Length: 474
Image 1 (cartoon, rainbow, N blue to C red):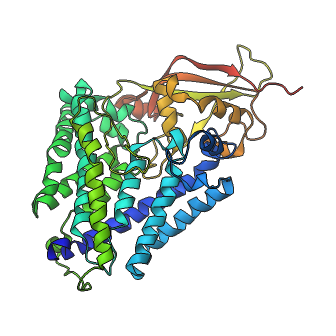
Image 2: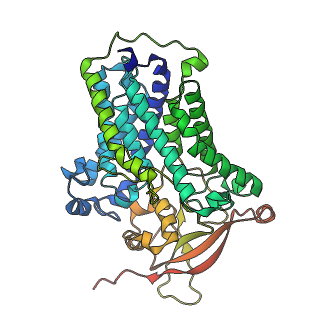
Image 3: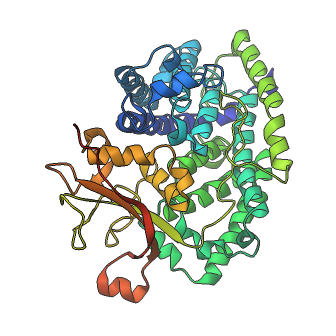
């Protein structure tokens, strides 16, 4: 069945699979490094309590069978090791069935983490990685000619990612329609990067050009992904270029990098650079063909819900319609904040609070805290606490149910929690009181930046949490 295979996409598959393995590695590494403080047995939102409240059918996970922090660490670090092995080429050195098992193990492991991750894993790129990882199980390896149907399913995923994001903007905030959203976005985005100050200071006409180009890239270009070559490849290159622009302007975990990796599977690399496809076996195994057809039928059936969502005037962003995070709907920044609000957590070791009490700031690794610190480059790594702190600044509603437990951990100088922070102003003994205050942050102007070397101005808005202390033990 010549229509079933596309040997010219062997290099696109290779680039895509190695890129996905690299993203898996980063995702598992972030999980291994952060889980104890966030969702561990004594974390801010413990997994054991979640498992008691949520049945397996709603959140399929190996942790329903058994959970300890040690077991979670074993799953996460095994994911790191397996991702590294696949990145190094292991999946291409083993038989097809073994390669599928390797990719399947990665998918099951990460899905298991996402499904118990609660609010810390409620981001669109988690579902995106789960969906892309599932499809990759059936993409074959170096011993198999790339299957056309799976390549089309990857294009369908990239289309939903881009077009869904474009629609949510067009239907959402009016600043997307009048081309002014980027007057604010580079400053108010969840986690600015090293170049965000410079992007924010671009002339306003260029910001309008940015928005118009974004609309073209997300609302028009995605249809080109389904066109014949070389037009599909050109559309994919446009997606790659726009995603690289977003990578330069801010930190969005691995969202943009995964979009780039997906787009590489669309490009006809041999036509562009000339390497001939290798010799593949005469035909894939029949059982493999049958699996590919079955998975294609499944994706078609599950596509009803995201298509209905995209056509709806009440379009949802980043929603999964099944507990396996397959064939999801995507979208981002349907509304744009005009001002940046940051929750600053402070502590003191004074025994009593007085007018002259000295309060010291806790420093975060990624989110703005110290006004003199340049926004760091974090992506594609994901700092989950920093992202949730940005949401907490938008509304105290987003601080449930983890913020008060976070304050308690700081009052205890909890080691796992402090590892999530950049600086602890009380390294030798816990603070006696902790409070939180809401500040408005704004990028400094050019002149102020030259004179003070500060990246941010901040102004106190109000008290977010009054000073609290641990209840004295009797």
